[in-house]
Amino acid sequence: MQNKIKVAILGFGNIGKHAVGAVQASPDMQLVGIVQPVADLDSSGLSLARHYNLVESIDQLSEVDVALLCIPTRAVQQTALQLLAQGINTVDSFDIHGELADLRIELDKVARANNSVAVISAGWDPGTDSMVRCMFEFMVPRGITYTNFGPGMSMGHTVAAKSIPGVDNALSMTIPAGTGIHRRMVYVQLKPEADFNEVANAIKKDAYFAKDETIVTQVDDVSKLLDMGHAVNMERKGVSGITHNQLLSYSMKINNPALTSQIMIASARASMKQKPGAYTMIQIPIIDYIYGNENDIIRTMV
Amino acid sequence: MQNKIKVAILGFGNIGKHAVGAVQASPDMQLVGIVQPVADLDSSGLSLARHYNLVESIDQLSEVDVALLCIPTRAVQQTALQLLAQGINTVDSFDIHGELADLRIELDKVARANNSVAVISAGWDPGTDSMVRCMFEFMVPRGITYTNFGPGMSMGHTVAAKSIPGVDNALSMTIPAGTGIHRRMVYVQLKPEADFNEVANAIKKDAYFAKDETIVTQVDDVSKLLDMGHAVNMERKGVSGITHNQLLSYSMKINNPALTSQIMIASARASMKQKPGAYTMIQIPIIDYIYGNENDIIRTMV
Image 1: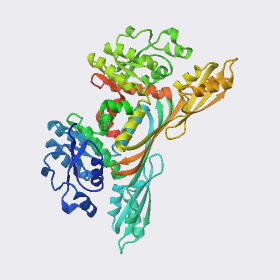
Image 2 (image 1 turned 90 degrees about the vertical axis):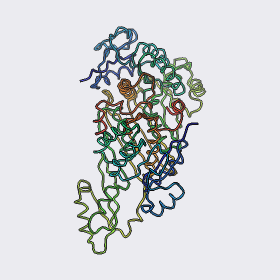
Image 3 (image 1 turned 45 degrees about the horizontal axis):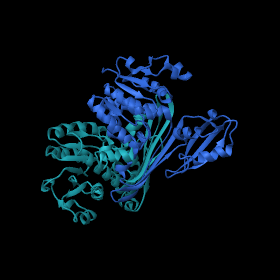
Image 4 (image 1 turned 180 degrees about the horizontal axis):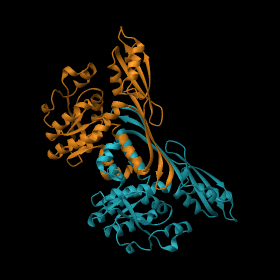
């Protein structure tokens, strides 16, 4: 029996909380600690975290193989660099598509120098969607892939809507309109003095919303609308060799933080099997993400 | 500019013919020859092959990096062992699920000893379907995956139907009935003396058909029904962490030999990037199958 992989959860928001169950459901892993200052925990976080080894700093944990960075994307780079320099593997779900290639190059140097492994952007998009997009590319090298998101809550658009003056609380839902085009359904709860039309116009002019059809609706209580479900439908039509009209499709309807944390757990497992360096999910063999013996997996799943 | 990958096509049936277009559409590859005795070519094969370097044995080709084994599954092991021993990479679409794990172990020894690489079972099932099945497994580790095939022609069932006494020609279509259950629609063209009811009963009792709903229909000319389209729908419902009802789905509607040969081409490319040994598709990073520069692929596709 090999030793279990020692996992620490850094950050205890939605993804961190879901990661607890995912680590515990993995026969090859053990949760060595949750790293989060008590002052930053909400009530549900506090009632869950107190059953585990809750610490303020990862340095208080004696042995960590992999740290799951369940923290805001903007905090990933600095935190990962520190941990990789200590020889601790990191897994993040960094989600800015335009910046992840450079992040990987940056982390790669430090990981190689310190005998550690980073798996970056290990969520569903970027992440498993990227894996499927790349499979579609080599199966059907000419053609168009459309990634249609939703229905589901967009974190980025919700934060943007909340920042508009007069908005007390907001929710921006992403609605797929086909061929990679999306409608934004924005639900706003207003401050007492706010004018709905002014708020709605300000949202529609915001850079996050200006390019998409955006419909703003006033509600009394945004919190009653919140739901962690999300969805994706990816479609490709194109050419294999010289043969046209090859049709590929991938879709999912999932609880967002539950899937993200599960993918991070699988990536934590894969990190233990890679040479030092930083990787996106497409750079790691699929078999490395799966629990079990190599030949058994090939025998039963290929 | 790096040298192009020198590809030989062994066997010139449906997959071999489609492989020609797939090699030529790949900017990093060149077709160095088609290996097939002229006597074994059909008329369409002859008219296509004569535009290329057609030889009877691979030994007549001076330089080959990768051989695409577009030959019957039962001929793969012996042919691959010979080529791997000569230091030539091989790619096959060996399709017997229950035997591929042992085939890999067998080829792996010879490939390692001779500094060559084999990618085995590089088709769509086993192959890319296996990659998606394995992704579904690590995304949603508990649950059931159903692989639903068709509508499309089953080679194995068609051969079985043709071997029934009284059958002149036959076609067995696989029709998905959901949850991995399939109906067999068998179209038979009878010999003059044959009795339809006897033939139909013999087909239904055959081991290939006995477990499935099988409907046999008599037709005048099977050749008028032939079509290379096929389809797959794969579904998984299960649990990520402790969260139930995670729904994943993958489907495609494709020209079968066109997709198979394209996947073999991608695997030929990937073979050039692996250490000596034999691999199933899940053991190779997805990025290795794609044409282009690593950082460009990450920047544009992840």
